[in-house]
Length: 542
Image 1 (cartoon, rainbow, N blue to C red):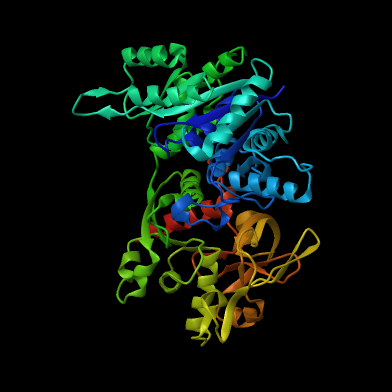
Image 2 (image 1 turned 30 degrees about the horizontal axis):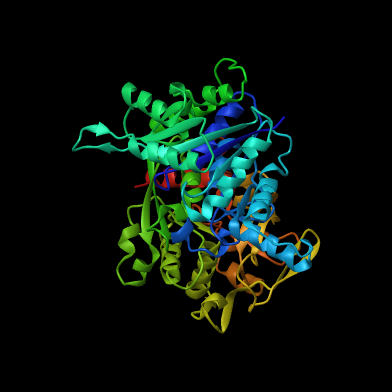
Protein backbone atom coordinates (compact mmCIF):
# COMPACT_ATOMS: atom_id res chain seq x y z
CA UNK A 1 0.00 0.00 0.00
CA UNK A 2 1.34 3.40 -1.01
CA UNK A 3 1.15 6.12 1.64
CA UNK A 4 1.10 9.81 0.84
CA UNK A 5 2.91 12.64 2.65
CA UNK A 6 1.95 16.21 1.74
CA UNK A 7 4.44 18.97 2.59
CA UNK A 8 3.10 22.53 2.71
CA UNK A 9 4.64 25.81 3.77
CA UNK A 10 3.51 28.98 5.47
CA UNK A 11 4.52 32.47 6.61
CA UNK A 12 7.18 33.04 3.92
CA UNK A 13 8.49 31.28 0.86
CA UNK A 14 11.97 29.74 0.47
CA UNK A 15 11.87 28.05 3.88
CA UNK A 16 13.30 24.88 2.42
CA UNK A 17 10.27 22.66 1.70
CA UNK A 18 12.16 20.98 -1.14
CA UNK A 19 15.13 20.22 1.05
CA UNK A 20 12.87 19.00 3.87
CA UNK A 21 11.04 16.69 1.45
CA UNK A 22 14.32 15.34 0.06
CA UNK A 23 15.78 14.79 3.53
CA UNK A 24 12.65 13.00 4.74
CA UNK A 25 12.75 10.81 1.63
CA UNK A 26 16.37 9.93 2.43
CA UNK A 27 15.44 9.11 6.04
CA UNK A 28 12.63 6.78 4.96
CA UNK A 29 15.03 5.09 2.52
CA UNK A 30 17.53 4.64 5.34
CA UNK A 31 14.80 2.74 7.19
CA UNK A 32 14.32 0.41 4.23
CA UNK A 33 11.29 2.02 2.57
CA UNK A 34 10.97 2.94 -1.11
CA UNK A 35 10.03 6.53 -1.94
CA UNK A 36 9.01 8.82 -4.77
CA UNK A 37 8.94 12.61 -4.57
CA UNK A 38 6.75 15.04 -6.48
CA UNK A 39 6.39 18.80 -6.75
CA UNK A 40 3.10 20.64 -7.39
CA UNK A 41 3.74 24.18 -8.63
CA UNK A 42 0.81 26.64 -8.52
CA UNK A 43 2.12 29.12 -11.12
CA UNK A 44 0.48 29.36 -14.56
CA UNK A 45 3.61 28.72 -16.66
CA UNK A 46 3.40 25.37 -18.41
CA UNK A 47 6.93 24.59 -17.18
CA UNK A 48 9.95 26.55 -15.89
CA UNK A 49 11.73 26.22 -19.25
CA UNK A 50 11.08 29.74 -20.52
CA UNK A 51 11.29 31.44 -17.13
CA UNK A 52 14.24 33.61 -16.17
CA UNK A 53 16.65 31.95 -13.72
CA UNK A 54 16.24 35.08 -11.60
CA UNK A 55 12.55 34.20 -11.31
CA UNK A 56 12.77 30.51 -10.67
CA UNK A 57 16.36 29.38 -10.26
CA UNK A 58 17.78 26.67 -12.47
CA UNK A 59 15.69 24.48 -14.73
CA UNK A 60 16.19 20.84 -13.82
CA UNK A 61 15.98 18.38 -16.72
CA UNK A 62 14.93 14.75 -16.35
CA UNK A 63 16.00 11.73 -18.39
CA UNK A 64 12.66 11.71 -20.22
CA UNK A 65 13.04 15.32 -21.31
CA UNK A 66 10.96 17.33 -18.85
CA UNK A 67 11.95 20.84 -17.78
CA UNK A 68 11.13 20.88 -14.10
CA UNK A 69 11.49 22.72 -10.84
CA UNK A 70 14.93 22.85 -9.21
CA UNK A 71 13.59 21.00 -6.14
CA UNK A 72 13.57 17.81 -8.22
CA UNK A 73 17.35 18.13 -8.22
CA UNK A 74 17.29 17.98 -4.41
CA UNK A 75 15.06 14.92 -4.60
CA UNK A 76 17.45 13.09 -6.92
CA UNK A 77 20.61 14.08 -5.07
CA UNK A 78 19.25 12.94 -1.70
CA UNK A 79 17.39 9.78 -2.71
CA UNK A 80 19.08 8.67 -5.93
CA UNK A 81 15.62 8.07 -7.45
CA UNK A 82 15.56 9.43 -11.04
CA UNK A 83 12.91 12.11 -11.49
CA UNK A 84 10.52 12.03 -14.45
CA UNK A 85 7.87 14.12 -16.21
CA UNK A 86 5.31 12.58 -13.90
CA UNK A 87 6.97 14.15 -10.84
CA UNK A 88 6.34 17.84 -11.51
CA UNK A 89 3.21 19.64 -12.62
CA UNK A 90 2.10 23.26 -12.79
CA UNK A 91 -1.28 24.94 -12.84
CA UNK A 92 -0.47 25.91 -16.42
CA UNK A 93 -0.10 22.28 -17.50
CA UNK A 94 -3.28 21.27 -15.73
CA UNK A 95 -5.30 24.06 -17.37
CA UNK A 96 -3.68 23.32 -20.73
CA UNK A 97 -4.85 19.71 -20.54
CA UNK A 98 -8.33 20.61 -19.30
CA UNK A 99 -8.88 23.23 -22.03
CA UNK A 100 -7.66 20.79 -24.68
CA UNK A 101 -10.20 18.24 -23.43
CA UNK A 102 -12.96 20.85 -23.38
CA UNK A 103 -12.12 21.80 -27.00
CA UNK A 104 -12.41 18.14 -28.00
CA UNK A 105 -15.84 17.93 -26.38
CA UNK A 106 -14.76 15.46 -23.70
CA UNK A 107 -16.97 17.17 -21.13
CA UNK A 108 -20.09 16.75 -23.32
CA UNK A 109 -21.07 20.38 -23.06
CA UNK A 110 -20.90 20.48 -19.26
CA UNK A 111 -19.60 23.45 -17.30
CA UNK A 112 -15.87 23.14 -16.61
CA UNK A 113 -15.02 24.31 -13.08
CA UNK A 114 -12.18 24.41 -10.59
CA UNK A 115 -14.11 21.92 -8.49
CA UNK A 116 -14.30 19.16 -9.55
CA UNK A 117 -12.35 19.31 -12.80
CA UNK A 118 -9.13 21.05 -11.73
CA UNK A 119 -8.98 19.38 -8.34
CA UNK A 120 -9.69 15.98 -9.90
CA UNK A 121 -6.81 16.53 -12.36
CA UNK A 122 -4.48 17.32 -9.44
CA UNK A 123 -5.60 14.24 -7.55
CA UNK A 124 -5.11 12.07 -10.62
CA UNK A 125 -1.57 13.42 -10.94
CA UNK A 126 -0.76 12.70 -7.28
CA UNK A 127 -2.10 9.14 -7.44
CA UNK A 128 -0.81 8.16 -10.89
CA UNK A 129 2.39 6.35 -11.83
CA UNK A 130 3.58 5.85 -8.26
CA UNK A 131 5.26 2.55 -9.14
CA UNK A 132 3.95 0.82 -6.03
CA UNK A 133 6.44 2.59 -3.72
CA UNK A 134 5.92 2.69 0.04
CA UNK A 135 5.75 6.50 0.26
CA UNK A 136 4.96 9.28 -2.18
CA UNK A 137 6.05 12.70 -0.88
CA UNK A 138 4.25 15.64 -2.50
CA UNK A 139 5.54 19.15 -1.98
CA UNK A 140 3.09 21.99 -2.70
CA UNK A 141 4.87 25.09 -3.93
CA UNK A 142 4.22 28.57 -2.53
CA UNK A 143 2.64 29.27 0.84
CA UNK A 144 -0.73 28.57 2.38
CA UNK A 145 -3.13 31.42 1.67
CA UNK A 146 -1.85 32.07 -1.87
CA UNK A 147 -4.85 32.42 -4.20
CA UNK A 148 -3.14 30.42 -6.95
CA UNK A 149 -2.41 27.57 -4.55
CA UNK A 150 -6.00 27.07 -3.35
CA UNK A 151 -6.91 24.35 -5.90
CA UNK A 152 -3.88 22.30 -4.78
CA UNK A 153 -4.73 22.64 -1.10
CA UNK A 154 -8.33 21.70 -1.86
CA UNK A 155 -7.17 18.66 -3.84
CA UNK A 156 -4.95 17.32 -1.04
CA UNK A 157 -7.74 18.04 1.48
CA UNK A 158 -10.04 15.85 -0.58
CA UNK A 159 -7.39 13.14 -0.81
CA UNK A 160 -7.03 13.18 2.96
CA UNK A 161 -10.72 12.24 3.22
CA UNK A 162 -10.94 9.92 0.22
CA UNK A 163 -7.92 7.72 0.89
CA UNK A 164 -8.22 5.09 3.65
CA UNK A 165 -7.56 6.23 7.20
CA UNK A 166 -3.86 6.12 8.01
CA UNK A 167 -2.74 6.52 4.42
CA UNK A 168 -2.01 10.29 4.44
CA UNK A 169 0.15 12.61 6.50
CA UNK A 170 0.23 16.42 6.38
CA UNK A 171 3.48 18.20 7.27
CA UNK A 172 3.49 21.98 7.54
CA UNK A 173 6.71 23.98 7.44
CA UNK A 174 6.67 27.39 9.12
CA UNK A 175 9.05 30.10 10.28
CA UNK A 176 9.76 30.66 13.95
CA UNK A 177 11.66 33.94 14.13
CA UNK A 178 13.83 35.23 16.96
CA UNK A 179 13.27 38.90 17.84
CA UNK A 180 16.55 40.25 19.26
CA UNK A 181 14.98 43.30 20.88
CA UNK A 182 12.50 41.10 22.74
CA UNK A 183 15.04 38.37 23.40
CA UNK A 184 12.61 35.59 22.54
CA UNK A 185 11.29 33.38 19.77
CA UNK A 186 7.84 34.12 18.45
CA UNK A 187 5.18 31.46 17.91
CA UNK A 188 2.51 33.69 16.40
CA UNK A 189 3.62 33.35 12.74
CA UNK A 190 3.31 29.58 13.10
CA UNK A 191 -0.04 29.85 14.85
CA UNK A 192 -1.48 32.09 12.13
CA UNK A 193 -0.11 29.87 9.36
CA UNK A 194 -1.72 26.78 10.88
CA UNK A 195 -4.95 28.74 11.40
CA UNK A 196 -4.94 29.56 7.67
CA UNK A 197 -4.33 25.92 6.82
CA UNK A 198 -7.11 24.70 9.10
CA UNK A 199 -9.52 27.27 7.64
CA UNK A 200 -9.34 25.41 4.32
CA UNK A 201 -9.92 22.08 6.01
CA UNK A 202 -6.41 20.70 6.58
CA UNK A 203 -5.17 19.84 10.06
CA UNK A 204 -1.40 19.29 9.99
CA UNK A 205 -0.11 16.13 11.64
CA UNK A 206 3.44 17.44 12.01
CA UNK A 207 4.85 20.95 12.27
CA UNK A 208 8.40 21.73 11.19
CA UNK A 209 9.55 25.05 12.61
CA UNK A 210 12.47 26.67 10.77
CA UNK A 211 14.67 28.50 13.24
CA UNK A 212 18.22 29.64 13.85
CA UNK A 213 18.43 28.47 17.47
CA UNK A 214 16.90 25.80 19.71
CA UNK A 215 13.20 26.19 20.53
CA UNK A 216 12.58 26.38 24.28
CA UNK A 217 10.38 23.64 25.76
CA UNK A 218 7.69 26.14 26.78
CA UNK A 219 7.44 27.47 23.22
CA UNK A 220 7.11 23.93 21.85
CA UNK A 221 4.27 23.22 24.25
CA UNK A 222 2.61 26.49 23.29
CA UNK A 223 2.77 25.65 19.58
CA UNK A 224 1.40 22.17 20.22
CA UNK A 225 -1.44 23.55 22.33
CA UNK A 226 -2.58 26.32 19.97
CA UNK A 227 -1.95 24.42 16.73
CA UNK A 228 -3.70 21.24 17.87
CA UNK A 229 -0.78 18.84 17.40
CA UNK A 230 1.05 16.47 19.73
CA UNK A 231 4.11 18.02 21.47
CA UNK A 232 6.30 15.36 19.83
CA UNK A 233 5.01 16.51 16.43
CA UNK A 234 6.61 19.96 16.81
CA UNK A 235 9.90 19.39 15.01
CA UNK A 236 12.74 21.85 15.34
CA UNK A 237 14.29 22.50 11.91
CA UNK A 238 17.42 24.46 12.69
CA UNK A 239 19.94 25.89 10.25
CA UNK A 240 22.92 23.57 9.60
CA UNK A 241 26.33 24.25 8.12
CA UNK A 242 25.83 21.83 5.21
CA UNK A 243 22.61 20.64 3.59
CA UNK A 244 23.90 17.06 3.70
CA UNK A 245 23.60 17.15 7.48
CA UNK A 246 19.84 17.73 7.24
CA UNK A 247 18.81 14.03 7.22
CA UNK A 248 20.82 13.37 10.41
CA UNK A 249 19.56 16.59 12.02
CA UNK A 250 15.92 15.76 11.28
CA UNK A 251 16.37 12.23 12.58
CA UNK A 252 17.84 13.59 15.82
CA UNK A 253 14.73 15.76 16.17
CA UNK A 254 12.50 12.74 15.64
CA UNK A 255 10.92 13.60 12.28
CA UNK A 256 11.05 10.09 10.81
CA UNK A 257 9.79 8.55 14.06
CA UNK A 258 6.83 10.94 14.11
CA UNK A 259 5.98 10.22 10.46
CA UNK A 260 5.94 6.48 11.14
CA UNK A 261 3.74 7.13 14.17
CA UNK A 262 1.20 9.04 12.04
CA UNK A 263 0.92 6.02 9.74
CA UNK A 264 0.80 3.55 12.63
CA UNK A 265 4.04 1.90 11.49
CA UNK A 266 6.51 0.41 13.98
CA UNK A 267 9.73 2.28 14.73
CA UNK A 268 12.26 -0.47 14.02
CA UNK A 269 15.44 0.87 15.54
CA UNK A 270 17.60 3.58 14.01
CA UNK A 271 18.04 4.25 10.30
CA UNK A 272 21.38 3.60 8.62
CA UNK A 273 22.82 7.08 8.13
CA UNK A 274 26.44 6.00 7.72
CA UNK A 275 26.77 7.33 4.15
CA UNK A 276 25.45 10.74 5.22
CA UNK A 277 27.83 10.82 8.18
CA UNK A 278 30.73 10.02 5.84
CA UNK A 279 29.71 12.85 3.52
CA UNK A 280 29.45 15.44 6.31
CA UNK A 281 32.79 14.26 7.72
CA UNK A 282 34.46 14.82 4.34
CA UNK A 283 32.93 18.32 4.15
CA UNK A 284 33.81 19.37 7.70
CA UNK A 285 37.32 17.93 7.80
CA UNK A 286 38.85 18.47 4.36
CA UNK A 287 42.48 17.69 3.68
CA UNK A 288 42.94 20.74 1.47
CA UNK A 289 41.06 23.36 -0.53
CA UNK A 290 40.78 24.68 -4.08
CA UNK A 291 39.23 27.81 -5.57
CA UNK A 292 37.06 27.52 -8.66
CA UNK A 293 35.95 30.57 -10.65
CA UNK A 294 32.43 30.33 -12.05
CA UNK A 295 32.14 32.78 -14.93
CA UNK A 296 28.42 33.17 -15.55
CA UNK A 297 25.69 35.74 -16.18
CA UNK A 298 23.28 34.85 -13.36
CA UNK A 299 25.73 35.09 -10.48
CA UNK A 300 23.38 37.43 -8.62
CA UNK A 301 21.14 34.47 -7.80
CA UNK A 302 23.04 31.35 -6.82
CA UNK A 303 19.93 29.14 -7.27
CA UNK A 304 20.43 29.61 -11.02
CA UNK A 305 23.41 27.27 -10.65
CA UNK A 306 22.14 25.04 -7.84
CA UNK A 307 23.05 21.65 -9.37
CA UNK A 308 26.39 23.04 -10.51
CA UNK A 309 27.31 24.22 -7.01
CA UNK A 310 26.38 20.88 -5.50
CA UNK A 311 28.28 18.93 -8.17
CA UNK A 312 31.44 20.91 -7.46
CA UNK A 313 30.96 20.15 -3.76
CA UNK A 314 30.58 16.46 -4.68
CA UNK A 315 33.87 16.67 -6.59
CA UNK A 316 35.39 18.11 -3.43
CA UNK A 317 33.99 15.24 -1.34
CA UNK A 318 35.52 12.73 -3.79
CA UNK A 319 38.94 14.42 -3.40
CA UNK A 320 38.57 15.24 0.32
CA UNK A 321 39.00 18.96 -0.29
CA UNK A 322 36.91 22.06 0.32
CA UNK A 323 35.81 23.77 -2.89
CA UNK A 324 35.65 27.55 -2.61
CA UNK A 325 33.60 29.23 -5.32
CA UNK A 326 34.59 32.59 -6.76
CA UNK A 327 31.57 34.03 -8.57
CA UNK A 328 32.46 36.29 -11.48
CA UNK A 329 29.93 38.11 -13.66
CA UNK A 330 31.03 37.32 -17.21
CA UNK A 331 30.40 40.88 -18.39
CA UNK A 332 33.32 42.22 -16.32
CA UNK A 333 35.78 40.53 -18.70
CA UNK A 334 34.51 42.60 -21.60
CA UNK A 335 36.52 45.50 -20.19
CA UNK A 336 40.32 45.56 -20.70
CA UNK A 337 42.69 44.50 -17.93
CA UNK A 338 40.17 42.49 -15.93
CA UNK A 339 41.71 39.05 -16.36
CA UNK A 340 43.52 39.56 -13.03
CA UNK A 341 40.28 38.30 -11.44
CA UNK A 342 41.30 34.82 -12.62
CA UNK A 343 44.92 34.84 -11.57
CA UNK A 344 44.36 33.40 -8.10
CA UNK A 345 42.01 30.53 -9.03
CA UNK A 346 42.81 26.84 -9.44
CA UNK A 347 40.17 26.11 -12.06
CA UNK A 348 37.71 27.94 -14.30
CA UNK A 349 34.19 26.76 -15.05
CA UNK A 350 31.98 28.40 -17.67
CA UNK A 351 28.40 27.13 -17.22
CA UNK A 352 25.42 26.97 -19.53
CA UNK A 353 23.35 29.99 -20.49
CA UNK A 354 21.48 31.71 -23.27
CA UNK A 355 21.88 34.92 -25.21
CA UNK A 356 24.67 37.24 -26.29
CA UNK A 357 24.99 39.16 -23.02
CA UNK A 358 28.16 38.10 -21.25
CA UNK A 359 29.35 35.85 -24.10
CA UNK A 360 32.52 37.84 -24.80
CA UNK A 361 33.46 37.55 -21.14
CA UNK A 362 33.07 33.77 -21.27
CA UNK A 363 35.25 33.69 -24.40
CA UNK A 364 37.89 35.75 -22.54
CA UNK A 365 37.76 33.32 -19.60
CA UNK A 366 38.23 30.34 -21.97
CA UNK A 367 41.22 32.12 -23.54
CA UNK A 368 42.78 32.74 -20.15
CA UNK A 369 42.41 29.09 -19.16
CA UNK A 370 43.81 27.82 -22.46
CA UNK A 371 46.82 30.12 -22.62
CA UNK A 372 47.71 29.95 -18.89
CA UNK A 373 47.25 26.15 -18.53
CA UNK A 374 44.53 26.57 -15.91
CA UNK A 375 42.04 23.64 -15.66
CA UNK A 376 38.94 24.57 -17.65
CA UNK A 377 35.46 23.05 -17.70
CA UNK A 378 32.95 24.37 -20.25
CA UNK A 379 29.35 23.18 -19.96
CA UNK A 380 26.83 23.59 -22.81
CA UNK A 381 27.14 27.29 -23.72
CA UNK A 382 30.57 27.20 -22.07
CA UNK A 383 31.77 24.55 -24.53
CA UNK A 384 30.44 26.60 -27.45
CA UNK A 385 32.33 29.70 -26.27
CA UNK A 386 35.53 27.64 -25.90
CA UNK A 387 35.23 26.49 -29.53
CA UNK A 388 34.61 30.05 -30.75
CA UNK A 389 37.62 31.25 -28.77
CA UNK A 390 39.93 28.62 -30.27
CA UNK A 391 38.84 29.35 -33.85
CA UNK A 392 39.07 33.13 -33.41
CA UNK A 393 42.54 33.13 -31.91
CA UNK A 394 44.18 30.05 -33.40
CA UNK A 395 42.50 29.44 -36.77
CA UNK A 396 42.44 32.99 -38.09
CA UNK A 397 38.64 33.21 -37.95
CA UNK A 398 38.05 36.54 -36.15
CA UNK A 399 34.39 36.51 -37.25
CA UNK A 400 33.67 33.15 -35.61
CA UNK A 401 30.37 33.48 -33.76
CA UNK A 402 27.00 31.94 -33.00
CA UNK A 403 23.80 32.48 -34.96
CA UNK A 404 22.17 32.92 -31.54
CA UNK A 405 23.82 36.37 -31.48
CA UNK A 406 22.57 37.36 -34.94
CA UNK A 407 23.66 36.85 -38.59
CA UNK A 408 27.31 35.88 -39.03
CA UNK A 409 29.64 34.90 -41.86
CA UNK A 410 31.23 32.22 -39.68
CA UNK A 411 28.39 30.30 -37.98
CA UNK A 412 30.59 28.16 -35.72
CA UNK A 413 27.57 27.61 -33.49
CA UNK A 414 24.14 27.31 -35.11
CA UNK A 415 20.53 26.47 -34.36
CA UNK A 416 19.77 22.78 -34.50
CA UNK A 417 16.89 22.19 -36.89
CA UNK A 418 16.87 18.42 -36.64
CA UNK A 419 18.28 15.60 -34.54
CA UNK A 420 17.63 11.94 -33.87
CA UNK A 421 15.77 10.81 -30.75
CA UNK A 422 14.94 7.12 -30.26
CA UNK A 423 15.25 6.42 -33.99
CA UNK A 424 12.90 9.32 -34.75
CA UNK A 425 13.89 12.51 -36.57
CA UNK A 426 12.96 15.57 -34.50
CA UNK A 427 12.67 18.86 -36.43
CA UNK A 428 12.41 22.46 -35.24
CA UNK A 429 12.06 25.79 -36.96
CA UNK A 430 13.87 28.98 -36.04
CA UNK A 431 10.56 30.85 -35.83
CA UNK A 432 8.74 28.34 -33.59
CA UNK A 433 7.70 28.63 -29.94
CA UNK A 434 10.48 28.60 -27.37
CA UNK A 435 8.86 26.37 -24.78
CA UNK A 436 9.81 22.71 -24.85
CA UNK A 437 11.53 22.96 -28.25
CA UNK A 438 15.08 22.24 -27.19
CA UNK A 439 17.03 19.04 -27.35
CA UNK A 440 15.90 17.86 -23.95
CA UNK A 441 16.56 14.81 -21.83
CA UNK A 442 19.02 11.94 -21.90
CA UNK A 443 20.93 11.16 -25.10
CA UNK A 444 23.76 8.76 -25.73
CA UNK A 445 27.18 9.86 -26.96
CA UNK A 446 30.18 7.99 -28.31
CA UNK A 447 33.54 8.97 -26.87
CA UNK A 448 36.83 8.61 -28.72
CA UNK A 449 38.81 5.67 -27.40
CA UNK A 450 41.94 6.82 -25.61
CA UNK A 451 40.67 10.37 -25.10
CA UNK A 452 40.95 11.98 -21.70
CA UNK A 453 37.17 12.14 -21.27
CA UNK A 454 36.76 8.45 -22.16
CA UNK A 455 39.39 7.62 -19.54
CA UNK A 456 37.53 9.73 -16.97
CA UNK A 457 34.25 7.93 -17.65
CA UNK A 458 35.93 4.55 -18.02
CA UNK A 459 33.72 3.97 -21.08
CA UNK A 460 33.30 5.05 -24.69
CA UNK A 461 29.48 5.03 -24.48
CA UNK A 462 27.73 7.45 -22.13
CA UNK A 463 24.24 8.87 -21.55
CA UNK A 464 23.82 12.43 -20.33
CA UNK A 465 21.05 15.01 -20.08
CA UNK A 466 20.82 17.86 -22.58
CA UNK A 467 19.11 21.24 -22.70
CA UNK A 468 20.05 23.36 -25.69
CA UNK A 469 18.91 24.73 -29.04
CA UNK A 470 22.31 25.54 -30.49
CA UNK A 471 25.14 23.22 -31.37
CA UNK A 472 28.73 23.49 -32.60
CA UNK A 473 28.77 23.29 -36.41
CA UNK A 474 30.49 20.06 -37.37
CA UNK A 475 31.73 21.55 -40.68
CA UNK A 476 34.35 23.44 -38.62
CA UNK A 477 35.72 20.25 -37.08
CA UNK A 478 38.86 20.01 -39.24
CA UNK A 479 39.83 23.66 -38.66
CA UNK A 480 39.14 23.25 -34.94
CA UNK A 481 41.25 20.13 -34.60
CA UNK A 482 44.06 21.85 -36.51
CA UNK A 483 44.33 24.19 -33.50
CA UNK A 484 44.89 21.27 -31.15
CA UNK A 485 41.34 21.16 -29.79
CA UNK A 486 39.83 17.72 -30.45
CA UNK A 487 36.19 16.71 -30.84
CA UNK A 488 36.40 13.68 -28.54
CA UNK A 489 32.71 12.79 -28.33
CA UNK A 490 29.87 12.79 -30.86
CA UNK A 491 26.24 11.74 -31.08
CA UNK A 492 25.70 8.11 -32.18
CA UNK A 493 24.91 9.30 -35.76
CA UNK A 494 28.17 11.27 -35.82
CA UNK A 495 26.43 14.55 -36.68
CA UNK A 496 26.56 16.45 -33.37
CA UNK A 497 29.72 17.18 -31.36
CA UNK A 498 29.19 16.30 -27.70
CA UNK A 499 32.61 16.86 -26.10
CA UNK A 500 35.83 18.72 -26.86
CA UNK A 501 39.23 18.64 -25.18
CA UNK A 502 42.82 19.80 -25.59
CA UNK A 503 45.05 16.74 -25.10
CA UNK A 504 48.18 18.85 -24.50
CA UNK A 505 46.51 20.98 -21.80
CA UNK A 506 46.61 19.92 -18.11
CA UNK A 507 42.78 19.71 -18.09
CA UNK A 508 40.63 21.40 -20.71
CA UNK A 509 37.25 19.81 -21.43
CA UNK A 510 33.97 21.10 -22.83
CA UNK A 511 30.69 19.17 -22.95
CA UNK A 512 27.45 20.02 -24.71
CA UNK A 513 25.35 18.31 -22.05
CA UNK A 514 24.78 19.00 -18.36
CA UNK A 515 26.69 16.49 -16.21
CA UNK A 516 25.77 18.40 -13.04
CA UNK A 517 22.23 17.00 -13.32
CA UNK A 518 23.38 13.46 -12.57
CA UNK A 519 25.87 14.06 -9.76
CA UNK A 520 25.04 12.93 -6.21
CA UNK A 521 26.93 13.37 -2.93
CA UNK A 522 27.31 9.62 -2.51
CA UNK A 523 28.10 9.15 -6.24
CA UNK A 524 29.99 12.24 -7.51
CA UNK A 525 30.00 12.68 -11.29
CA UNK A 526 33.37 11.54 -12.69
CA UNK A 527 33.88 14.78 -14.65
CA UNK A 528 33.53 16.92 -11.54
CA UNK A 529 35.74 14.57 -9.52
CA UNK A 530 38.41 14.75 -12.23
CA UNK A 531 38.09 18.54 -12.60
CA UNK A 532 38.56 19.12 -8.87
CA UNK A 533 41.49 16.67 -8.89
CA UNK A 534 43.10 18.75 -11.67
CA UNK A 535 42.38 21.97 -9.75
CA UNK A 536 44.03 20.43 -6.69
CA UNK A 537 47.13 19.63 -8.73
CA UNK A 538 47.08 23.21 -10.05
CA UNK A 539 46.89 24.62 -6.52
CA UNK A 540 50.05 22.74 -5.58
CA UNK A 541 51.94 24.27 -8.50
CA UNK A 542 51.47 27.80 -7.19
